[in-house]
Image (cartoon, rainbow, N blue to C red):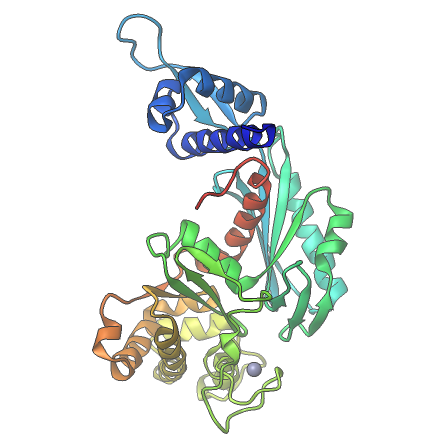
Length: 392
Ligand SMILES: [Zn+2]
């Protein structure tokens, strides 16, 4: 065996040992040796390195069956932290997570405008605030993931974010000049899909489509457990599939785009014409939810109409991907109570019975945090890629 191979084998074994402690702690050296088939000497040597690197710590505990007390190994989930930021059109949501993805802090601020400089300043402020609230740790902040509502190239460049009015923005480079850790930029729907797959409604599914319904609509596609990014990272722009042949003109250049009929923007624009809100200067999403909660018929009818359009897009998704689940997330997750009926009705009217079998319509269980949590998880995976070998 060549030295290169030996290093690779060692890295692989160390990666497997770390993974077992992370997923199953507390475990003993004997447990790991039994599970991996590695000798006790090899396991002890790898554990020694992982303890030196602060990823694992040991505690003497458990009942002894005579002889020495068993020493149990724990994953040090607070050896470092990651930040996740969701850039919305009118607000920024941030989270601080530990190395197991547990949520420690949240940051929420409104955006007054979407100029690149304003948003960059607010994102910088949110990351700084979350960094300051993180406990002392050996690795500190190991990375930040940022979800943006637009197309992101394979090198993290933001190509086109129509709802922000951005084209070719290099936020990654700007933030990496400010912060000493890696910045990962992802499309917000991809980040949301990743978050729901890891920690939310999609944890049991291998094939799912996450539909992020906020100001616009984006989708994140998970196939065989992995996020599908497309050839150049631009997959999932289903908010711009046409559902009205002669419909409204969209900022993307197309006509009759799905998001013009089934997004929060569509809902609020149409709500502004309702009698209920005729005295309002500006109708907010909370206003609509409040009226729906009070059983306002006019508002419920509008939500029902928007739900019909949402359902039509979901039908197209199911016909294309045959997923186990479609998860409705972002702001519209709050409309679950009223959206489920119209969307499911459209599915039952328009899908063939065999397509409906075993399919589940779900709403995001992480609610508005899917994207921030998923973005944080990307930063975490980037950090661990130095220590772990992915064999999945
Ligand atoms: Zn469009």
